[in-house]
Image (cartoon, rainbow, N blue to C red; front, top):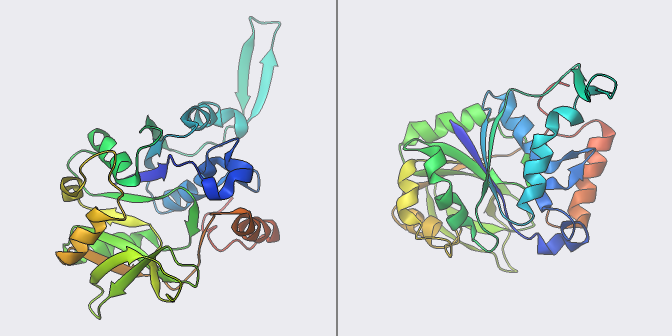
Length: 259
């Protein structure tokens, strides 16, 4: 199953860093948050990624082009025809497709644009600015068990993103934007989607969190996988500092993989 990562937005709420690089390339420790997300999926055996790039998309492509340089010891031998010798290579077994999905394309449009790389099969999707310790295998098993079009991971947080009305059967009956009085389950990303989801996306101007999710919720085709563990997005510098301190402590909850 392929993993789609949304990494094309401007990151305007984190302009101190996103002025110079895409928000998914902002580092926690010495590696981009995008790498942290991918490492989590890879731990569960999902190693094929499609990155929906946009703003400063060349930086994402260049980072992956040089990834083996980042993770290996290198000898630059200028005496033997300018050879580059790679030692102790530690790159993951990843297949990464970086797609320029447009500068101003909204989230639904970005997903629609990568449809040719996904094909007619279920896939996973999440945002390129949030980390989580959700068990991906359990999430996929839950999605397969109910037979609906879409599953999203829900968490209960004070900082609201997209508010969910979840029934006792874990069906999502409505999906809407936050308001100041909300304190309930929210959309944390980490979704599993059947290919029928593409039929709900019109084009570049479609926000995935608006009409597509609202429509499938109204049709009882959206389910919630409730996660009670760790989740944290990185919308601003304060949230980045939370993640950075957790990583520096050596006890980052989302680090499920071994070094």
